[in-house]
Image 1 (cartoon, rainbow, N blue to C red):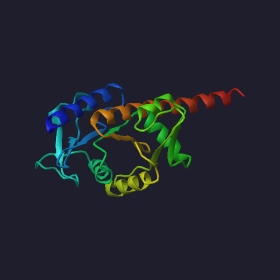
Image 2 (cartoon, one colour; image 1 turned 90 degrees about the vertical axis):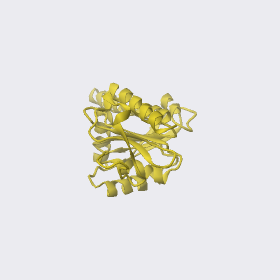
Image 3 (tube, rainbow, N blue to C red; image 1 turned 120 degrees about the horizontal axis):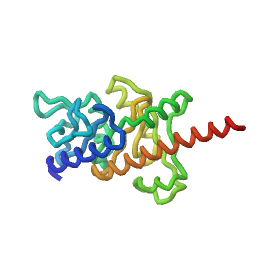
Image 4 (cartoon, helix red, strand yellow; image 1 turned 180 degrees about the horizontal axis):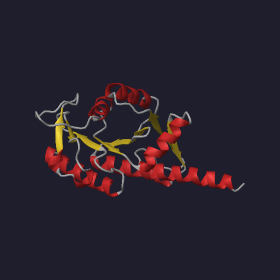
Length: 212
Protein backbone atom coordinates (compact mmCIF):
# COMPACT_ATOMS: atom_id res chain seq x y z
CA UNK A 1 0.00 0.00 0.00
CA UNK A 2 1.18 3.52 -0.74
CA UNK A 3 1.24 6.34 1.80
CA UNK A 4 -2.18 7.74 0.89
CA UNK A 5 -3.87 4.36 1.25
CA UNK A 6 -2.20 3.72 4.60
CA UNK A 7 -3.04 7.23 5.81
CA UNK A 8 -6.68 6.61 4.90
CA UNK A 9 -6.72 3.27 6.73
CA UNK A 10 -5.20 4.85 9.85
CA UNK A 11 -7.77 7.65 9.75
CA UNK A 12 -10.59 5.11 9.46
CA UNK A 13 -9.15 3.02 12.31
CA UNK A 14 -8.94 6.14 14.45
CA UNK A 15 -12.56 6.99 13.77
CA UNK A 16 -13.65 3.50 14.78
CA UNK A 17 -11.57 3.41 17.99
CA UNK A 18 -12.82 6.85 19.00
CA UNK A 19 -16.43 5.82 18.33
CA UNK A 20 -16.00 3.06 20.94
CA UNK A 21 -14.84 5.55 23.57
CA UNK A 22 -11.27 4.24 23.46
CA UNK A 23 -9.63 7.53 22.40
CA UNK A 24 -11.11 10.40 24.45
CA UNK A 25 -10.11 13.99 23.71
CA UNK A 26 -6.91 13.88 21.61
CA UNK A 27 -5.49 10.76 23.29
CA UNK A 28 -4.00 7.82 21.43
CA UNK A 29 -1.73 7.55 18.43
CA UNK A 30 -1.63 5.25 15.41
CA UNK A 31 1.06 4.27 12.96
CA UNK A 32 1.98 1.93 10.11
CA UNK A 33 5.25 0.83 8.55
CA UNK A 34 5.85 2.08 5.01
CA UNK A 35 7.65 0.18 2.25
CA UNK A 36 10.95 2.02 2.80
CA UNK A 37 10.82 1.36 6.57
CA UNK A 38 9.79 4.90 7.35
CA UNK A 39 6.65 5.19 9.49
CA UNK A 40 3.32 6.87 8.87
CA UNK A 41 1.99 8.19 12.19
CA UNK A 42 -0.67 10.55 13.53
CA UNK A 43 0.27 14.16 14.13
CA UNK A 44 0.35 15.40 17.71
CA UNK A 45 -2.85 16.88 19.13
CA UNK A 46 -5.32 15.56 16.55
CA UNK A 47 -8.88 14.65 17.51
CA UNK A 48 -8.79 10.90 16.81
CA UNK A 49 -12.50 10.78 16.10
CA UNK A 50 -12.08 13.22 13.21
CA UNK A 51 -8.88 12.02 11.62
CA UNK A 52 -8.27 12.58 7.93
CA UNK A 53 -5.29 11.47 5.83
CA UNK A 54 -3.86 14.99 6.21
CA UNK A 55 -3.46 14.26 9.94
CA UNK A 56 -0.91 11.53 9.13
CA UNK A 57 2.77 12.39 8.76
CA UNK A 58 5.98 10.43 8.10
CA UNK A 59 8.93 9.88 10.45
CA UNK A 60 12.14 7.95 9.97
CA UNK A 61 13.09 4.81 11.88
CA UNK A 62 14.25 6.88 14.84
CA UNK A 63 11.04 8.88 14.99
CA UNK A 64 12.34 12.07 13.40
CA UNK A 65 9.93 13.97 11.08
CA UNK A 66 10.84 13.89 7.39
CA UNK A 67 9.12 17.22 6.77
CA UNK A 68 10.29 20.23 8.83
CA UNK A 69 7.64 21.84 11.01
CA UNK A 70 5.60 18.69 11.52
CA UNK A 71 5.30 17.17 14.99
CA UNK A 72 4.19 13.65 15.83
CA UNK A 73 3.24 12.33 19.26
CA UNK A 74 5.77 12.47 22.08
CA UNK A 75 5.24 8.69 22.18
CA UNK A 76 6.51 8.13 18.64
CA UNK A 77 9.51 6.18 19.96
CA UNK A 78 7.13 3.59 21.43
CA UNK A 79 6.02 2.90 17.87
CA UNK A 80 9.36 2.99 16.06
CA UNK A 81 11.07 0.80 18.66
CA UNK A 82 8.46 -1.91 18.01
CA UNK A 83 9.07 -1.75 14.26
CA UNK A 84 12.80 -2.08 14.82
CA UNK A 85 12.45 -5.03 17.21
CA UNK A 86 9.70 -6.93 15.37
CA UNK A 87 9.97 -7.00 11.55
CA UNK A 88 6.54 -8.67 11.25
CA UNK A 89 4.79 -5.71 12.92
CA UNK A 90 3.21 -3.54 10.26
CA UNK A 91 0.90 -1.30 12.27
CA UNK A 92 0.61 -0.14 15.89
CA UNK A 93 -2.49 1.33 17.55
CA UNK A 94 -2.55 2.98 20.98
CA UNK A 95 -5.80 3.49 22.91
CA UNK A 96 -6.71 5.16 26.22
CA UNK A 97 -9.90 3.37 27.26
CA UNK A 98 -11.26 3.81 30.77
CA UNK A 99 -11.13 0.05 31.38
CA UNK A 100 -7.49 -0.35 30.29
CA UNK A 101 -6.41 2.65 32.34
CA UNK A 102 -8.33 1.44 35.40
CA UNK A 103 -7.35 -2.23 35.25
CA UNK A 104 -3.68 -1.50 34.53
CA UNK A 105 -3.47 0.74 37.62
CA UNK A 106 -5.22 -1.87 39.75
CA UNK A 107 -2.88 -4.64 38.61
CA UNK A 108 0.29 -2.61 39.14
CA UNK A 109 -0.76 -1.64 42.66
CA UNK A 110 -0.98 -5.35 43.43
CA UNK A 111 2.49 -6.04 42.16
CA UNK A 112 1.41 -7.78 38.96
CA UNK A 113 3.46 -7.29 35.82
CA UNK A 114 1.10 -8.84 33.28
CA UNK A 115 -2.51 -9.59 32.50
CA UNK A 116 -3.11 -13.24 31.58
CA UNK A 117 -6.12 -13.86 29.35
CA UNK A 118 -7.59 -17.35 29.06
CA UNK A 119 -10.96 -19.10 28.62
CA UNK A 120 -12.46 -16.33 26.54
CA UNK A 121 -13.82 -17.22 23.09
CA UNK A 122 -12.71 -13.85 21.73
CA UNK A 123 -9.07 -14.88 22.16
CA UNK A 124 -9.44 -16.57 18.76
CA UNK A 125 -9.50 -13.11 17.16
CA UNK A 126 -5.80 -12.80 18.02
CA UNK A 127 -3.12 -14.22 15.68
CA UNK A 128 -2.10 -17.80 16.33
CA UNK A 129 -4.90 -18.50 18.84
CA UNK A 130 -7.29 -21.28 17.78
CA UNK A 131 -9.05 -22.17 21.03
CA UNK A 132 -10.70 -20.43 23.95
CA UNK A 133 -8.45 -22.19 26.45
CA UNK A 134 -5.29 -20.77 24.96
CA UNK A 135 -3.39 -18.25 27.01
CA UNK A 136 -2.28 -14.74 26.08
CA UNK A 137 -0.04 -12.64 28.33
CA UNK A 138 -0.27 -8.86 28.06
CA UNK A 139 2.77 -7.31 29.80
CA UNK A 140 2.28 -4.33 32.08
CA UNK A 141 4.84 -1.56 32.54
CA UNK A 142 4.89 1.48 34.81
CA UNK A 143 4.32 4.83 33.12
CA UNK A 144 7.13 7.31 32.47
CA UNK A 145 7.59 10.54 30.54
CA UNK A 146 11.10 9.41 29.57
CA UNK A 147 10.32 7.77 26.23
CA UNK A 148 13.81 6.31 25.81
CA UNK A 149 13.63 4.56 29.18
CA UNK A 150 9.98 3.58 28.68
CA UNK A 151 10.54 2.04 25.25
CA UNK A 152 13.52 0.08 26.61
CA UNK A 153 11.39 -1.17 29.53
CA UNK A 154 8.63 -2.20 27.13
CA UNK A 155 10.97 -4.17 24.88
CA UNK A 156 12.52 -5.89 27.90
CA UNK A 157 9.08 -6.96 29.12
CA UNK A 158 8.00 -8.16 25.68
CA UNK A 159 11.04 -10.45 25.51
CA UNK A 160 9.47 -12.53 28.30
CA UNK A 161 6.32 -13.18 26.26
CA UNK A 162 5.95 -15.64 23.41
CA UNK A 163 4.37 -14.02 20.32
CA UNK A 164 3.30 -10.77 22.04
CA UNK A 165 0.24 -8.99 20.67
CA UNK A 166 0.13 -5.97 22.96
CA UNK A 167 1.05 -4.41 26.29
CA UNK A 168 -0.41 -1.95 28.77
CA UNK A 169 1.17 1.09 30.38
CA UNK A 170 -0.26 1.50 33.88
CA UNK A 171 -2.69 4.40 34.09
CA UNK A 172 -2.09 5.16 30.44
CA UNK A 173 -3.55 2.59 28.07
CA UNK A 174 -3.05 -0.20 25.56
CA UNK A 175 -0.58 -0.66 22.71
CA UNK A 176 -1.42 -3.42 20.23
CA UNK A 177 -0.37 -4.30 16.71
CA UNK A 178 -0.65 -6.50 13.65
CA UNK A 179 0.88 -7.14 10.25
CA UNK A 180 -1.53 -4.61 8.70
CA UNK A 181 -3.70 -1.77 9.96
CA UNK A 182 -6.75 -4.03 9.62
CA UNK A 183 -5.13 -6.76 11.71
CA UNK A 184 -3.96 -4.24 14.31
CA UNK A 185 -7.48 -2.85 14.52
CA UNK A 186 -8.91 -6.35 15.07
CA UNK A 187 -6.34 -7.11 17.77
CA UNK A 188 -7.01 -3.78 19.47
CA UNK A 189 -10.77 -4.32 19.48
CA UNK A 190 -10.37 -7.86 20.82
CA UNK A 191 -7.97 -6.83 23.59
CA UNK A 192 -10.09 -3.86 24.62
CA UNK A 193 -13.17 -6.08 24.96
CA UNK A 194 -11.20 -8.77 26.79
CA UNK A 195 -9.86 -6.20 29.26
CA UNK A 196 -13.43 -5.06 29.90
CA UNK A 197 -14.45 -8.69 30.49
CA UNK A 198 -11.65 -9.18 33.01
CA UNK A 199 -12.53 -5.98 34.85
CA UNK A 200 -16.21 -6.99 35.05
CA UNK A 201 -15.22 -10.46 36.26
CA UNK A 202 -13.18 -8.88 39.07
CA UNK A 203 -16.07 -6.61 40.07
CA UNK A 204 -18.53 -9.52 40.05
CA UNK A 205 -16.21 -11.66 42.18
CA UNK A 206 -15.89 -8.81 44.68
CA UNK A 207 -19.67 -8.44 44.73
CA UNK A 208 -20.06 -12.17 45.37
CA UNK A 209 -17.61 -11.98 48.28
CA UNK A 210 -19.56 -9.11 49.77
CA UNK A 211 -22.64 -11.36 50.05
CA UNK A 212 -20.78 -14.27 51.69
